[in-house]
Length: 313
View 1 (cartoon, rainbow, N blue to C red):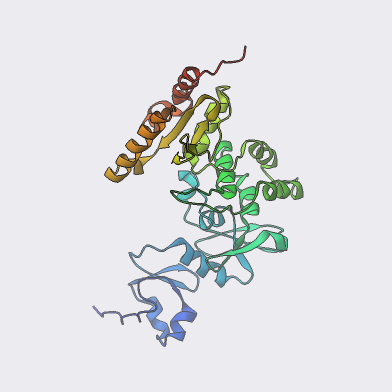
View 2 (cartoon, one colour):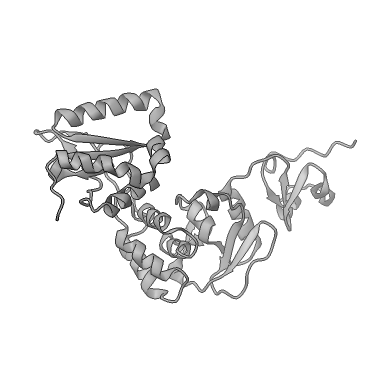
């Protein structure tokens, strides 16, 4: 069996275009060797090599003049968390601003869209729809609570003396403006309803879904990005959800809280909250899997009652 000519370093272990192959001085016939997979017209991928989304999106958008990434692809490039079903969509979603065609090639799903200059941005050198336009396009495909979580992701802004900070990708007003400009789009009613529930400060999908479940149980609305301080003003904790009037702190502990380092940090957090007179409620991923978000909210209700909350009626 004839061994294929080794690829140069700049093409090895990644997808590449036939133009890149020619520029590297590799003969045309090399593109048809058995170690390469025809991922799309004019694109080759070495078999067994997992491709980074940003690289694939950059390659495929460049192969279609004027194309830019949209919908699920744009959302993932902006770091927006999507439900499992959308994460498993391995197609790159492309469109053109003028909406005159749908890109047609293997690995691509094309969409007709009419976009203004204000709807086009760039991330990782890849042309994409803006965060606000991307969110509005998701309204046609995401379940309601996931759409709220996506809005929370795009508008999240946090500044804290410990932990990580976040800068909003767009504002709540940017999302509202998108809704106003596109009243006839699919999912527009869902988008309007989702904006009523979007809040700045939610750091993850579980935090958003827990907050929404709290609202369905007619509990007070929690405060996001609240800092618990000592009597002398020293910051001691930054709960995911806080009820300052009743000194109740709620934290969602996902899988990363199982590490030894994080467990130690969580123990310190709980001790500091208790020392400063706060009631702490920790909701775990396992509890949510067993009972659902609505099923764990009773623990928040019990803590609020202990803190002095009196239900209306």
